[in-house]
Length: 152
Image (tube, rainbow, N blue to C red):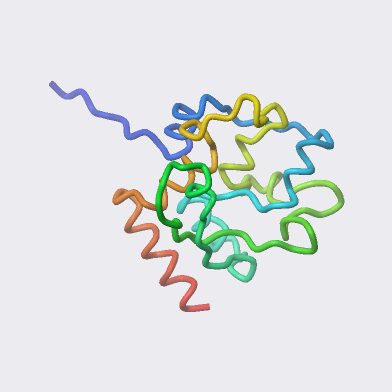
């Protein structure tokens, strides 16, 4: 009696499902991943909006899951826009969100050790982030995001 359940955060859930932990590698292979903006959970994206970055966010349809064979429709999300051949937050070889503790989940967990040889779709960071956009548990956050973006 009196045992309270501690709700798992999105980041904790994705860490558990992917086996990945936050990483801060700055090698050239990790920096090459910044050609494509990393995916953020609804909470990641809301934090970016609240920090004043709504002008760098766009509605997207994530279709990579269809190619991976984990889902048969594109997942609607709000995500970071690309810049000139890189993520719009990638400057001078580094992510400007990193020191602000605003780097989206995929970027926080991604590492150069992931390769085609050891890839499993069910453990994919991108897939596990995308699933957060489909979760009923995040409907309220997604609604707030849409409202905030419509007000800009």
